[in-house]
Image 1: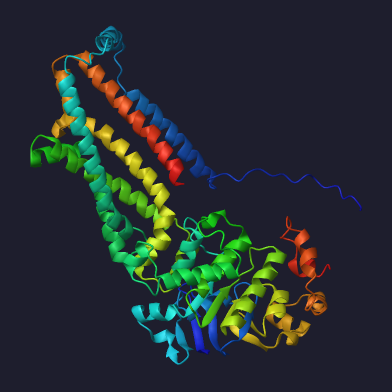
Image 2 (image 1 turned 90 degrees about the horizontal axis):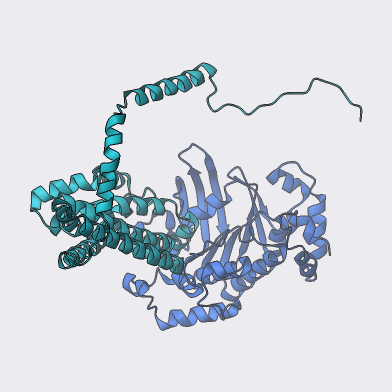
Length: 268
Length: 285
């Protein structure tokens, strides 16, 4: 082989944005905006310094947590939160199955798809607190408002993820079941359900855990449950009881977390 | 008998996958459909059971115009056409038995299938078929626990339990090693003979097609360019189907081992390298 000496050919990774002017404009623009955004943040350092001991006092008031004084109220609140969580998770998931099926592009005709996506978008665009305030106005104080809030939030969450999981399924398996002459519902049961089931069980448990945590939040705006108890404890400056409630919430969330991990492994 | 008349399929993208195909497959005939990727082989067999809707043309299965059926009639007609897939297409999280019984879905009602309470005759048939392909000890294994060859045998059972008149077979050996490929092709041919089934087998592997089919149809760019016996596949014909290439090797080797069962051993040695050219590998007896 004869060697031909030429200048080495250079190579560098092509940039993400081809136009170098646009690239610099975006980089500089981003930096300037960031600097301005930090500039408008008004921090009163004197106030922060004053606040630190106050914050520490507040935290110190949590200790030792008092499980005893308000035990009955706490138990009632926990029970209420748990049934709110269970019912809203079950109802929310039950309602989100037809909506999720309709929102899967590979299953539904276009108008059904758009309609169901619309429902999902609306139910996801309102944060739980906003929904809770609305439903407390509608149904009055108490756990029913919390139940409706969490059910609707569950539809948005679960329906969207179900639809996306169905869209990601293996079309080969679905086609094979269709080729046997199966009806639509049989096809759903034999081709779609086995493919999405494990993930859906995992997400159902995850949503259960979210709903329990959210039940504490919706309680604060009047939706009943442990949140209401927590709010009362704060209103009465009983921070030790509040600490007890927070610890119980953490314990329950952790218990759900561990058991859901176990169940997920089992259904794989 | 299956009859295709002027079958045309044009995809929304504008690709004309089939350009007026006319074809007759008599009862009991095993026909291999060969051709390069994109020739329309998959489209053709999917038009027959209308997993793909043909754009125009007619399809008859024993005088029943498949191309004109409404949805519920189409489901009834699909029961008579078993399909076997590339990559097996078993529902992976269902058991072997559930996968086989899913071939009966066209015959049983929703609640029966939902509760998995199939008629005893279906369960007997499933056990018989699984015994025939030597998998009756694995009925409750999940499909994703099986090896490739085992999965394809389950796929064959699923197609046969439909009690079909016609088998549509789409690249049955594309993901199998050379030895298993032969076993699967042999099994399909034997089962077709036992049950007097006709079959259309899409296959990339020219040599396997020659070994196991009694008739070969060559498809190129959506048109039939060869239709005849396996012996008729000369280098000129293969060039017509696939384009210019040195075909002499392929054909000579086929003649050598067409009645030689010993090739399985040699081909089976190379399990780790199924990506080697299978045509050549199979000839190394």
